[in-house]
Image (cartoon, rainbow, N blue to C red):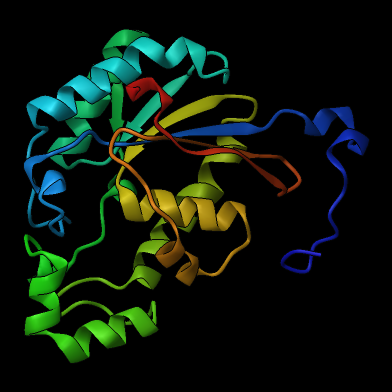
Length: 224
C-alpha cells in the first residue's frame, strides 16, 4: 500500500492505462555559484558558465540515447540558468520553450549567495530549525512545503492534459527532488537525502490511474 492506494503490478494493468505522461526532468547546467557551492535560488539569477553551457550541449547531443522516445514539449523555469539550458535543448529538438513559474527554484531568502559554512556561522538556530522541518523557511525566504505545493499542482495538471506524451522540464534542485518525492510517495523531507548534479537527467512516468514509475535519477552519463 502507498498513500492508501492498492498497488497493481505493472504487467497486470489494463492496456488503456499504458499511456503514461513522461517527465524528462533536467537540472540546469553549472553556474559560477554552482561551482562555488553557494545557495542559488530566485534572488540570485546567474547565467550558465562556460562549463554549464558545455554540459547542456553534451546533454542535447545525447537526447536521442535516453530511451524515452520523442519529446513533445519543453517547459522551463523562468530563471536565466534554466531558460538558457532549455533554449539549447529545445533548439536541438526543434521545439519552443514554455515558461512555468512553478518550476522556479526555492527562494532561500537571506541565505542566497552564501556557502553552507557562512550560514552555519550567521544563522545557527535558523539553520537547525530549517533542517528539522520542511515547513520552516530561511529568513525572508520560502519553505520546502510551499515549493512542494506548487510542484504538486504542476504534477496534477500535466498528466491528464498530456497522456502518452513526454514533457521536458528544465528546472532546479528543489522542484526536481520534490517531483521525485511525489513519484515515490515519500515525505517532503526526503529531499534532504537526495543529491542532484548540474545538467543531470531524471525520468518519472505518471500513469492515468495515479501510479508512478521512477525510471532513472540523477543520470550524468552524458557528461563522462
